[in-house]
Image (cartoon, rainbow, N blue to C red; front, side, top):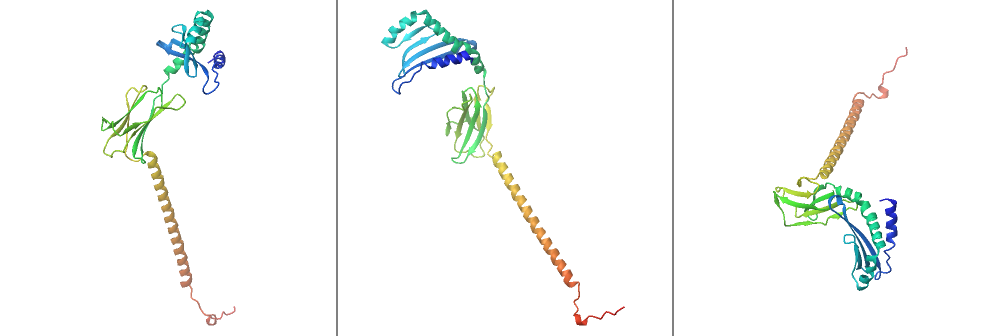
Length: 264
């Protein structure tokens, strides 16, 4: 949007005063893009009072329409005024025509959903989630052994992430038995064929990693404990052997019985 568009929106917003919660006037301007390349546009300018529609300009008809006795009579002058028609054409050009490229780019924007299938213990259920997809329209279906599941299934609303992307969640309860093949099927505009996510009843990868790390720590601790015990036993045994060798390897003779050493 260029600076001229920005200034126009700022000025236009001044015509939307709110006096109180019960008494306010508001003007809304809308552009409808349709046809090949969204080049067919319709500009509608509406005036409301306390949420009640009072008057409306439609670029397709090219005139104002009143919805109260007073506005019907008053708008006859506007419909006969060529300058009013010029103002409406200017507004349409600024708000609608100059933004066609942006609308076309938005129309070409798509995003493939990211699909995740997890189990929840409390309550016991499977959760199929689709994230980061656009456009909004999407369909999630549960399959049990290839057949669609219609009972014990619930869905969340399609929720906006606030950045053009959407997410949705579907729930199947309770968790099926391991012998059943449970599949979450996702259909979306960006997918050439439905995406299938099959439930694996084995432990999820994060849980397997936690268990592996725990076992590794347990084994390492056991090895360290065993090594320390063996080291202690070996040190103790060596000390005992040395003591035994020291005690049994010498003969203690009383000093008075010791032979005299002849001088040389």
